[in-house]
Image (tube, rainbow, N blue to C red; front, side):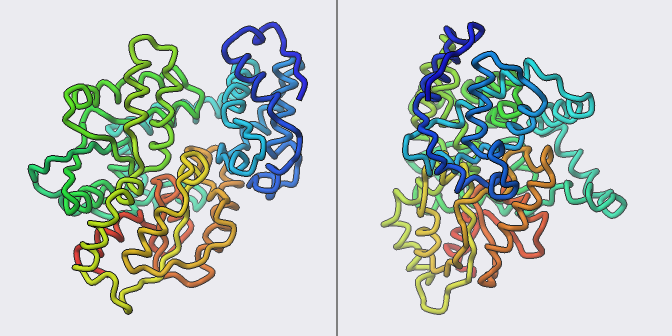
Length: 420
């Protein structure tokens, strides 16, 4: 793709990066075949190739309009297109650059600005989010259906206890995050119990809250970078002293973002090296368990999880941040199978469920359609339970399902505890 970037961005770091990404695109259109919004709307501008043209025109100095903003807003940032692209186009980075220019040039209506401000300020702060959720759940019967659906349910139920301090030689840190401790408190606790059986102590650093992903994708980059620095500050003493061997992510959305710390803070002289080291030490929970597959298999045999009649039928939704961004595919499925669960087939497993951070709030119609399509695909083989690997996907899917939607680590924990 030939480019002729405008002076306002041509000689900037963002401009040079965008120029390289644009030139790598060969217009093949393979990306449209796997784009969720293109499949729903059938509009070229609601697919990656069309959005790339919109961003190219914008960076070359052509007018930026509300139409440009609309089509970029509709993108889920699911990165399915990157998995499909034969040329390795880094679409998500180009989209971030384009969205930043749009935010500067196209003012949003007051109501939209107010909503985005509320999401940006409330969701990352547990002391605001927790009482807000409690009030919303209390008033749910009085709310119109369209609002009641947006009140998150506590999909994971109350947390069972963490294991007592074990004195294991191996230690890892889990990110508590911002919304997960409130909505699904059992997720990290279940992970701690599983790792404890494998001789790994899992702890949380209380000062490490939101990873920064929420604000970053709401285009509040400065605040997002502050969130990231706060997490690094909370973790760094344990890294510097060598007390921990790594960081365990139980929400794939957080994992994807933390693994980007090195890139996102590369120009910060105080944090660049720390960010790169923490990013390199970050692992999804599935990767940690997969690395312990031999002792895990022995524990599962002791628990009777490999018996012929032990299998519960399970449908697994792999979040986009797991399969497309982190490129972790088949690992959770293998762990569930090893634990004796029967995996139900799910059609179009590459497609997004519609959660996508705050997308389900900002684009409720499209998000609802994608959720219903995903639930239909997951429920086609009549599973007993649905599982996923990200808090956003879990609560979004649960909002449209009578069937429980859980984190997959809870099922491993139950098998090791002798449950079904």
